[in-house]
Image (tube, rainbow, N blue to C red; front, side):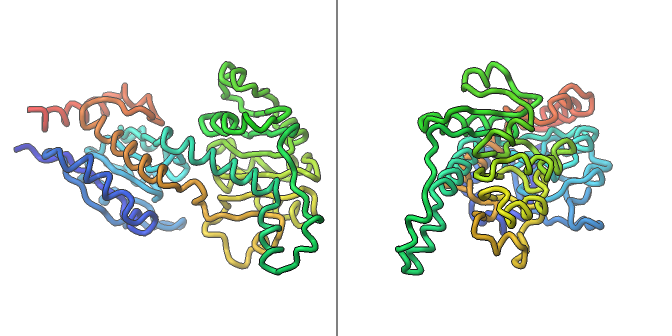
Length: 353
């Protein structure tokens, strides 16, 4: 019998989302006798901390990854690995050009994340607009006399803006449709104009989003274009009654500039599920503020997301196992590279007998 199709699963699943991936791979991989899978530890170490070393993945055809770093060094000398399936949609921890140069296809779970993250954004919009946590604290303190001093803000007639108009941003606008927003704005140089028009979203520049919106939401990927994009220059344009919501990636927003704006009352508040450094240090000034809602990069981690992330990541692996392209590749061009094609040919020769 030919050597099996081997899948390596990063060991951080056991701590980050314990018990969540095992039922999915049992369902999807166990019926296939040609497939075997196992957790592997991450052994690389550099100035930025741990990363996946070449030896960690040398004997796998596929890797299912939660959140470890894959650097250029990770793919050095790679001859076997054909697909890296990310459990989620962010891939700022992966050196994509190096992945492509190593003839490795990178796939993400767009369908699994779209709705849960959009729901998380809507949750923060409502929690901030109703000042839910302020009112919660009044009840806990027993001082109901101050409840009239904490008015809610209705969404009807308000303006909501998005930095980014991809899958999650589009789903967010769909979910908020029944609430009677006055205008929907988005800044995204790569936006699909037809999609925006169908959703009633005006494509504008960044300054307009920050200047005119009552709620500014961050819905773009973290890359060299967006790192530190939201800084004092744009935050200073916001209305003093406006809120900023970030469920994308922390480093897109200059955290020091945002903290200053919240401390000085320059904006009304913020809802943050992501931070520049995670976990957020317990002595960080943000933790002392009453006008910000904080979540541990897990607000979208619903039962649906856990299940669907696992299913779609495993589906990506099985697509390559079958010699096909997965549904949501990041580096699509790798499919035309001779090195990647040779890997697919080798896989077919090994198990399609």
